[in-house]
Amino acid sequence: MEETTYKALILDDEQELGETLSLALEEEGIQAIAVTSVDEAIQELKNASDFDIVISDIYLPEKSGKDFFEYSLTHFPDLPFIFITGNPNFETAVDFLKKGAYDYISKPFLIPQFIQKVKQVIEEAQRRKQEKYLVDDLRAILENRFKELRIYQDLFESKKQGVLILDSEGVVVRVNPWLEKFIGKKEAELKDHPIAILNEYLSPSLEFPEICETIFKNGEWKRELRAPDPRNPERPLIFNASIIPVQNEEGATFAYSMMLDDITSIREVESRLIESLQRTNLAQEAIIFGLARLAEYRDQETGYHLERIRNYCKVLAEALSVHPQYRNVISDSFIETIYRTAPLHDIGKVGIPDYILLKPDRLTPAEYEIMKTHTLIGYQTLNSIREQYGEMEFLNMGIDITYCHHEKFDGTGYPRGLKGDQIPLSAQIVAIADVYDALTSTRTYKKAFSHELSLNTMRVERGKHFDPQLFDVFLSIADQFNSIREEFKAKEKLPSSVERNLTFDVSAWDWLEDV
Image 1 (cartoon, rainbow, N blue to C red):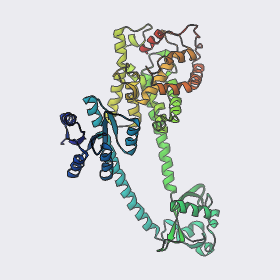
Image 2: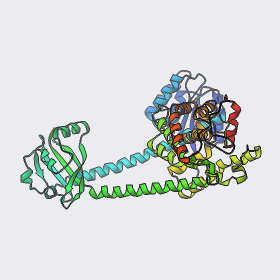
Image 3: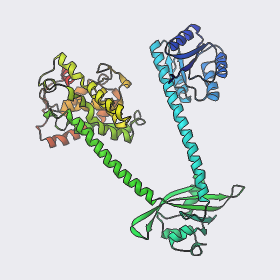
Image 4: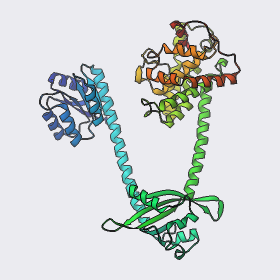
C-alpha cells in the first residue's frame, strides 16, 4: 500500500526562513511550498486545494497572517493552521486558537521542534477529518431512518404501534385498533375526552399544557411511559411515546399525533446485557487484580498496598474532575478505569529477582538499574496483550501507568525521562498515590512515616517529582488519603505509624528511589 504524502504551505516574508522550513519538511516526506505574501498564498490555495497544513507568519508587510487566516476560514474551513512569529503576544495567540488555529510557535525555534509540531497537527487534522466523515455518514443514516419511521408512523392502522390523534386542544379524535386493544376500550369511548383519560393506564401522567410547552421548545414531545401488563401484573410494559404537531400549509398547528411503540422486549434485552456487562467487568477486574497480585505475592509486607493505591487514585481523580484545569479531562469513565488499573502499576516486578526485590537494605547502583526495568517489563507484558486483542481503554491506561509512574515532572524520572505534560495524567496520579503509600507504610528498610511527616516530605518534591497543580489538589484532599490509610491499617492490624521527632532532611527522600 502506497504511503500517504502530505502537503504544506509556508507563508513567511523571510524568504530564506521559508525555504529552510520547506527543505526540512521535504526531508520528512512532506511536500512544501514557501511563499512570501498573502496574495501568493491565496493563489496557491486557489490553484491546489489539496494542502494538509498551513504554516503562516502573523506580522507581514501589507496584508497580515490574520487576513490570510480569515480568508482560509471562509473558503477552506477545515485547513489546519500553525502560526509562527518573532513577536509573541499571548492575547493574539489565544484569539487565533479560539477561531480555529491548531497551534502557535514563537521564534526562534528548533527545526526538530517545528517538524514535530507540524506532524502532530497534521495527524490531529486527519483524525478530525475522519471523525467528521463518520459523523456525516451517521447523520445521513439517521435521517434516512427517521424518514422511514415517519412513514411507519403514518400507517394509522398499524398493528405494532399505538396511534392517537388529538385536536389542537388536546382532545382525543382518533384511536387506532392497536391502542384500542391495549387499553381495552373502543375509539368511541375515548373520543371527545382530553388526553388525561390515558393516565388511568399510563404513567407518568400526561399533562397537555406541559406537552405543548415542550413541543413549542423542541418541536416534539418524547417520553418513556409504563403501563401494567394485563397478562402479567408483575411485568410492566414499556413504551416510547412521542407527540408531534400536525400543521397546515401555513405552518399553523391544527392537530397532534401521538405514537406509542412497545419497547418492553428491547428494555429487557438491554437489562440482561447490562447485567452481563457488569459480570464481565467484575471478572475483568478480578483478572487485573490477580495479575497485579503476581508482583506482590512474594513481598508479604505490602499488605493492602494495591487496595490503598486504587482508593487513593480514585479520590484524587474525583477531586481533579471538579477542578477547572482537569474537569474536561477527568470523566466518570476515567475515574472508574484508573480505579481498576492502578493496581497494575508494579506488575513488571514479576521479572525482578528475589535478591533485589526482597533486599532489606538500600540497593546498589547496579541493583537499582535492574529494579528500574520493572517499568519496561510491565509495559511489554501489557502491550503484548494489546497487540493480540486490540485497543481497550483499561489496557491503554494500564500501559500508561505501568510504563510511566516513575517519570518525574522535571524530567529526571525513568524509564524515558518524560517531562511535564508528556507524562500521562493517569501515571502522575498513581505516582502521588504510590509515593504517599510508600512513605506511610512499614518496609523492611524503614518504619512507617506519620501522615504529616509524609506530606512534609512530599512537599519538597512539588515541581520536581510532582506537577505543582496536581500536587496542590492532592494536598487539598490529603485528609481523605489519611482516612483510607487508617481504614486499611485497621484491617492489617499492624502497629501505628511511628511519630519521628526529627526535622526533615532532603536526603530522607533518597530511599524512595528504590520503591
